[in-house]
Image (cartoon, rainbow, N blue to C red):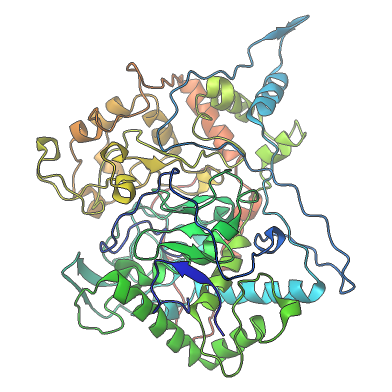
Length: 594
């Protein structure tokens, strides 16, 4: 039997929405019609289905099951920032945080300064998903779903042409990125709205068929961000296009999933257990990420509202007739066992049921929700261990939070306001194929990436991208939506004067096939119609940093690394139930900072 509601998805899709893709990720197939993501739209509600309880929809990474007698564990305390952006327009208020006051007997020590800044920012350290109350049997079911999701995540069976997995662009060994400036997907040549012509991939590990710098398949459009801690994000993707409909908080534990999740057309509003469950519907239908010319293999481009459900149906049929997977789904989503349900929206897979795609997406959502790694040295410092970070990191934290130089956008315990801003990032690489032939500033080029405007269609949203959360940032180069900066230092220095950084941009830090597109003209990015929010000019936020402060900021950003992130490679399975080969690791293109 099949569960879940969708609005705007179409009757064909549901059986019945993550991310190996989608966020690979953020590039679409080029066929979707933009829809607005402003926060003034009417709030959607679910009809004809029981509301899932809040404790059944968010999953913590480290849970302790309750006994079968029904005794319950106390949910963990959420520590995610609760600041609520009211619009996509960046705030331009003058920063007010300051810890330069003196006390009787002399100036504040650096620990005293940080104590004041931590309190002013409302930091609590180590954010987690709220822990649901589970019986021991429910806990076991959740572990089965996580393990099933892990196998699905790394299995090429979810690629229409069986050439990629979610892990191809988000591999565990690379902290769930691919270590590249721009993601690489299937071995297909794609002309948006015209054709996609696929060829056979080289054998795994040969001819550039690896994860890493040697991968030889064609470029996607954007950088693959890490999926670690993405379960804590209220907006996903570089332009924030997958999000909660409840915009009352930046804390996923305070957002009501019963309101649903907003996705661009043709998906519309999806009603699933979690945002990551909804997102897992998307990467498998992205032509250059996973789909290729599946299922018809004609190379013709169909409209997404017809193609997407057809692709998902073909993939579920493939897994349905894979005996190992069929057994795993029946075990993880048993029929007629209400005592084992984790949500009112749980799918069921009985012996006589067709496999619904919702079960595939839900299992992958459970796996990604286990990737919460928020026990960093900085968290331990926030929680009271004054020896958890070195002095350089403490000085860097002061530079980061004082006068809100960095925390004005990189706010809260997740270090993001989850709002889209134009900070003048150099436009390099293939972009998303956007152009503006009516404006001479664009020089007739068709390799622009318009960011949020592609979703809202609002001209002032051009070149706005979501503030990236910074946990684990030292391990996930390169940086920005197109991977244009190879090092933390270069990314930090960009914020001091974006116009100067654009003018002096060093193309040699790019991979050759990205650099081949050249540097698009700055005049378009710095057009007053799409204002850049950082810089020394009037109406811009000025961020002045000395060389010493830049070095200290790097030390602070390194302190945001949970040691578990360094051991993430062990999460990739050596074999998968389909029997298909798993991804072979190549080399990193950019050095990490430790």
